[in-house]
Image (tube, rainbow, N blue to C red; front, side, top):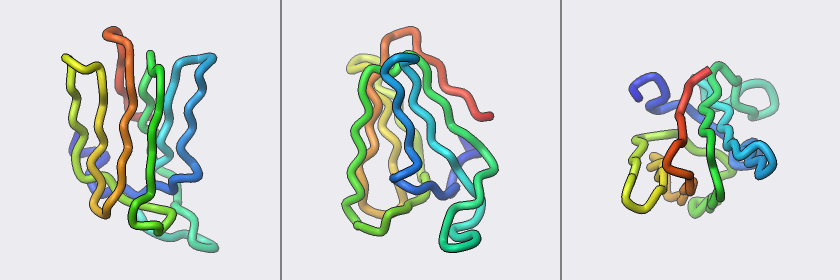
Length: 100
């Protein structure tokens, strides 16, 4: 997942849609665009998502991705960020991750 390493996102822009069972993170290459917003260049999409838990522990409103850990036994995707944060997505076993 080198394609998303160090890409920035805003916590407010994380979308979890329980009806479509999708979670989306809108990612950018730069920390700040106009008015401090991330300039979106990629979308990390996770299908068959059942729950999304995110906590901005550093209270910055934005963060960047360090690593993505997939725990198949627990059916959880844990996105490790570069600043203190919790970002965990629970999924069904048939989940898919794509970068658009």
